[in-house]
Image (cartoon, rainbow, N blue to C red; front, top):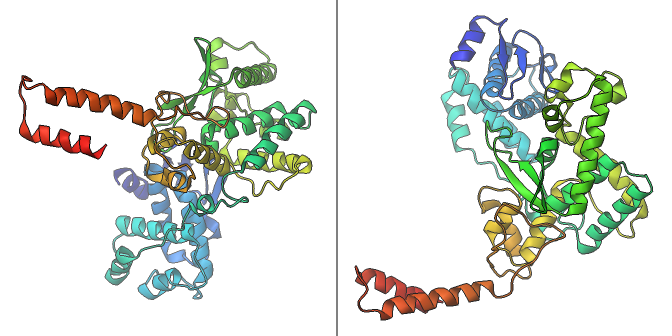
Length: 435
């Protein structure tokens, strides 16, 4: 709040977003990231509150994420559209009417609008009435069942079927060999299919994240959703040698493109810090900026992955014998997790495969699996499951439990054991009877 108070006292000050972008508070257009400019002039009905809205946006941009601000901007535009009066008041009737419209169930807008009003009220407690605040505190927004497409095996939105994934893999290889797909697109698609990682993780990859060690090959993916930890935490994924060779070739092509553009040789550390997947937009628009290639501006952004996937799938669909359904990277994550569940991997192993911190988000795959036995994956360590390498060791749990049982029985049969405790003995007996 202290930084925000300084800005409000001197509105011509610059402020930095959580991601490090600099914005002049007095401007009506804020370039909050590489892909989006927030135009405050689009607000028409919020004239009496516009400075407080700007301050709320600035506070969230500084302390949280510009993605929050982007969502707030669009949900507030929608709020203006829905309010029939000429001016926004944020009174109880106006706010409750917005949230209780029977014809509107956009979870993202509703959740974001509630979040925005809570932050607005936190910074400027005098704007919302006590009744409006109590209403927001009691408001429960129903979250859609995001795992519905997984549970119902929806071939358009859920995990790819075996036939669909086979068509994608085979036809993408054919398109690449026929030069219908660039190496860049082929590698994006292959890495998404193999790893199930998010687009934001794909675009953050650098050349130095390709690792060869003791005859094995890895991609060291940056972890995301770790607040304030950009490229601070990583999780390695073991990949086949063929994929590593293709990615290595792509990295050499990338460094050669940059070398030619900069018209000088690159040092080893400069090459290692280049992105694996470069942003080619500056080349197409002929606005290549030498300075930009010394920072993060040369990286792709996640939305580029989505647009490239659409282009890729159009080409694949022409060759495919089956419908591939809707196009998004999330379906590859669904597929990796579903295949893992079908092979009997435990929730913790599936969570690791998807780079989740907890197992809470992966239970839909476990419950949905036709082979829903829980097994221990002894080989997970720092590698991950992949579409091409899923395997289990039959009856692993039974084998391990049998060994544990023998050890415990041996312990109980030894009357001379030191520090014996009756409660511990009873606990062991209950455990043995349960297995």
